[in-house]
Length: 323
Image (cartoon, rainbow, N blue to C red; front, side):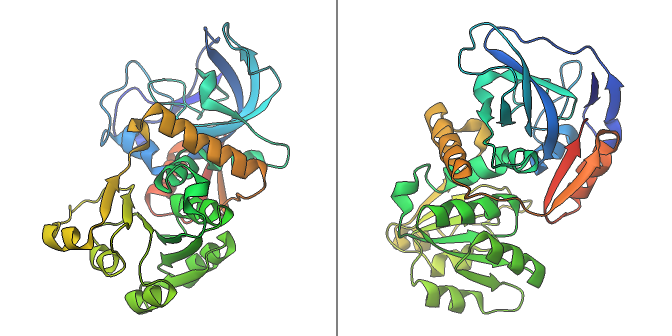
């Protein structure tokens, strides 16, 4: 099979497209013929060595994808050949990520893709949507009627945080940095969209809700003052992205607000929490509540260009097409 892979950490130039043997599934595994491979920031960070060490032999990147199961290993009773699926965490502890004609992975990391969902949408879920579901608490019933602030509503996690929260019955405000991004956030269903470059952010958000129940945060340090102004007893700030410059926390002000701060790294959450977030995402997808951001497609031979495009700040979802 053709696969994009790298043997050492480094810039995108370490990626090459090679012919390698097509792997066969072992016990508990399935092989998926990949239709779309989703690219996330975690993929280029792992490849560059920021978050992971050197690969063992070689690594096919990309955690997310969609395709059709074409082989099933022993001890797999709930997956079958020909089923459409979306994949999550395909490359976590596994060399066969989705940037290839086939991915080999544990069956539990595949989820049925309903007929009403495109392969592009399936490949857009995984890291962003499951992260969003976990940041929202993993339970749609718990946020019905809640006031939610999503920082960066035009990003991948922000997009699904808006859609999942709205589908659960929450009121959602979000922040963006441009008119185009505002249009994307509005299309996702946000009740209020604030441009933090042109609007009085705190004033507009406080008119929406004097206190937020939950804040989904992509830039905790940069937004700390805004978050404090919108926080009080019971507010939960959930941070899912790291920052180059770590914030200095004003402990007394945070304590006086009686708020909770949580940090989320998808690869380290407990199994039952991961299952809850995946199940919420899957059910919302089945009900037609999730959509894609604008799609930017690249052929497998241009996988390096695709990762660079995302790293440089692409707005929308970057997809690699292995077939």
